[in-house]
Image (cartoon, rainbow, N blue to C red):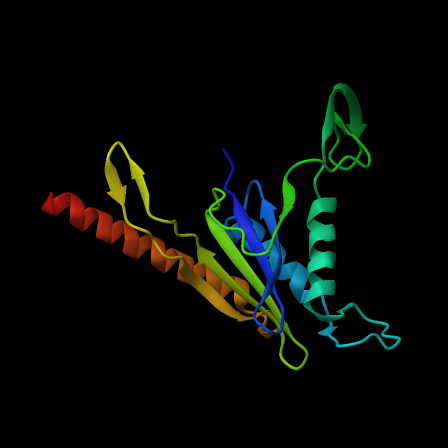
Length: 194
């Protein structure tokens, strides 16, 4: 079972425009790192294209399209009946099916939640400040099982900030570790009192 995640892209009016669903590896130290690195690769966010020669995004709609294309393009499917030599690592392995990017990354309508995600990333743009990225541990809606109702759990912010500061990923890792330690201590306290 994969660690699922959502990446929501939000415009300047705080309206979600699209949600990218990731089937696996959505945790901070894999996808969070790669998302942060990809977003850091943009020189700037603009409002109108004027002959730029650097890597830019023309607002969040352009940034979301480029980000989705980037991560969908990284999906590789293999032909397990066809083994080939990989000179990069010196091993014989299953051949990559060229142009086959099925699975792994999907698009959902704005506002999509509760599709099994464990992480939620929210991307916003500001022409002056740059790209803002927030990461959350996903909560859940109230649910009932075997006659027992569990209360809703809100999303919990791991870290939020402008990625052009260069410390977003390290700060997110520290914050996630602190959250995990706090939850572990809460769980231990419940066990002792039970």
